[in-house]
Length: 78
Image (tube, rainbow, N blue to C red; front, top):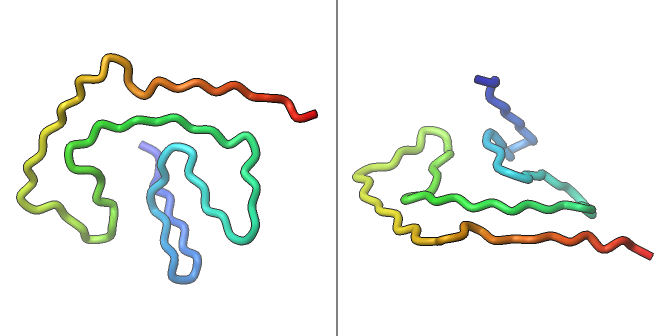
């Protein structure tokens, strides 16, 4: 298991990254930035320090025949 990543910028704490995550400060242009992702979660995520779910009841009804159909076609700049 890889070691945990913790980034602290003054009062901003980042300890969890998802697909195509970014932390940007100031003016930014994220060129060719593409991500297609689907999660089937009954109650989501709880990632804060000392946080907990209490009395969890959840159900997921995922009848999709095709999950997250997507396509991306890059058009070259002139």
